[in-house]
Image (cartoon, rainbow, N blue to C red):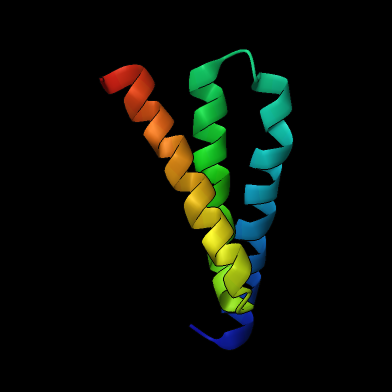
Length: 78
């Protein structure tokens, strides 16, 4: 994959992740949809922060995403 194509793909994924985060306040009443949007947003933003080497945001996304995954297990599987 060329550098420009990789950069464009990362940018598109980052934009989709941002849209997931922007949706979250409006779907707060539905826990399952809220948690799905939160996890998807964190996952879609990871390639962008890795590509631009923002290591503090990588840690923030991993910690935030793991908390939402924990909540899914706690609410629906335990």
